[in-house]
Length: 310
Image 1 (spheres, rainbow, N blue to C red):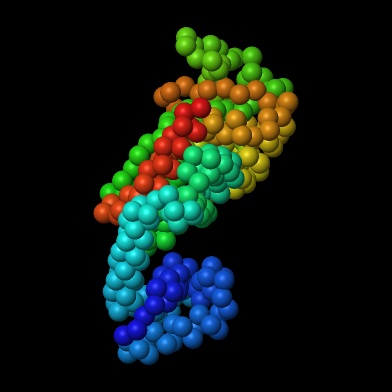
Image 2 (cartoon, rainbow, N blue to C red):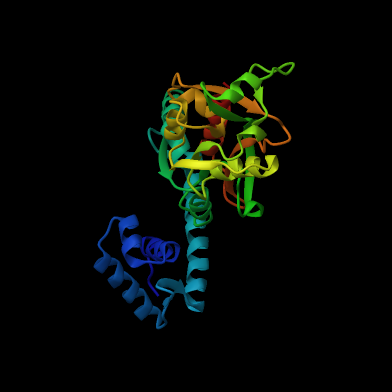
């Protein structure tokens, strides 16, 4: 059997997408070319790697064994590459870290990480990749990523080393003309006023898309407070959520640090909610247990810690 790393990536993409067309798009190749690659590998092995079920390609037993072995091979390749990179650190542009982030974080965190890293460690090359937390977990396990920056909603936490970078409160955006503003109150030691948002039951809210971590945190707060929001606008972009809510179209819940990187509008006030309802928000770096943690990964984590400490 003569299988290349490129072909392993092809099989893993098919498994993750469950569809040849989407897998080909992800790999930046044509669908016929990917079909030929799959056919060649199956002919070499003498077995089918995928079967179609409910309009989705699912791995057969042989496919699952191939995917398991492929993940192990990619992990070994990444570990060896990273360890060798550490040995030759200082040779221009030779060390690299492939780091993944959700798109709401990558838009403002990666440029800062890249700029600081270039100044402090000019030999280190950063390669960003974008995906949902679930997708980034899969890419870490398959050896595509070295490191990921994610909110602490980790599905398979037992498989990763998790380093918490920071934790904070959720912030409630309220239109300035809403009557609830008159009930805001101060608490000792807090630089922001509080609102009892149980009064916002059935009120208009700007919501994050289902499945997003900000949506999970918001829904947890709503459940704890026993209220049901009236979602008048749903977006995948947290900054768009803040901007739309800030214009006074409705209320919104989101992690506080997003206010630092978003253009705040004049149509809203911003409050904390009571700790009894606030699930909090944590951001972590994660990497696969058993994987080699390179100097580059350590340096990236230190820079990210400093960024969030600000």
